[in-house]
Image 1: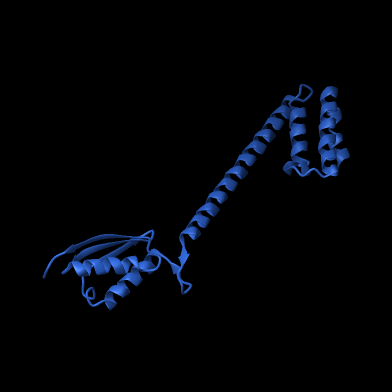
Image 2: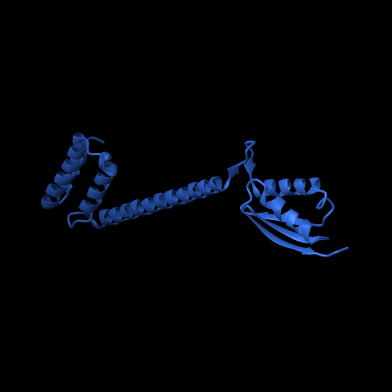
Length: 183
């Protein structure tokens, strides 16, 4: 649709409105040639659609054309809202992905450190330790915070469990809920 085709609808419009629309179209066309980089200014289609909607809403149009113009305007508004909502949703998804990636850290061996990884490492260290080998300590890890629960026979075993858990790579904090009960 060339510039002359757009102007061909202008005789149907009131002469004053036609002059305003010509100036509007000329301005958007001139902005493109000058090289203005302002989003929609590079695409004249929205300008033409808006100009035609405004023109048809004028008194020179028939009632059918006015209804058609109103419907076109509503369609444009609905589509714009839909696009904006889609963009907002995609932005939320990207932000959530970035936040999840930010929580992940990498071990010295290059493995991604997750809560499950930390729990497995602490359990393996407990199994290698003489004082804790057969203890009934349960280990729960959430957001790199290790919670130790259960019973041990000595305070030394309780301290050892907290020290091992705290020394495990990736652990931010240890919550020690171990109870000492002599056998």
